[in-house]
Image (cartoon, rainbow, N blue to C red; front, side, top):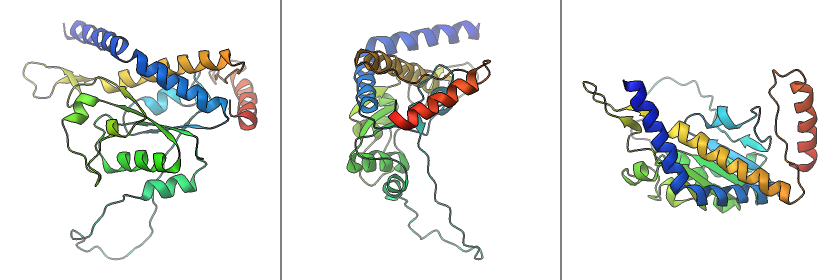
Length: 242
């Protein structure tokens, strides 16, 4: 049955992540701990799947992980015209976003993109490094190596990170060919991304405890004292960054 094939394929994916990405997870987790211990912030910019919902403000998760998102809101109600000749590149907007945000040099930016080729992803990676931040790149090295960058630098995400976490997703994502269907079934990157980043968090928590720092881990908001507990954690985080 396809369900059995799927579950075996996921087991194999996790086995591959364990055997190939352990050192990268340890390095990334230690970098997270170093950042938090210094009172700096950990930002997550994710264009993929699962990570924001799985890691950020989640019961059992680190409060210190914060989403980084931005957009440009332009209000200009002129009539519609042909703008095909206009250069619509938005390169450089990421640096503006960093300057307008709460980020500081010394912070950590975790960037997730499966293909790692889009201009906005490379823009934020390069801008974060120029701004004085460290970058952890979460991507598929195999997929990204097979595609052309859409950024003027020609770089892909795995070429921009201080540490690279390879989610081991195959080219074009799908893991399982199904007879009679052109596209392969079952994306790898979401499951892999969650697995890798929870692994990094485990390293970071252990490292912080070794340093005498108790990191804030959220309770479920549906647990009987969850909201009150989390409110106190938020106040603690605002004072310490932990």
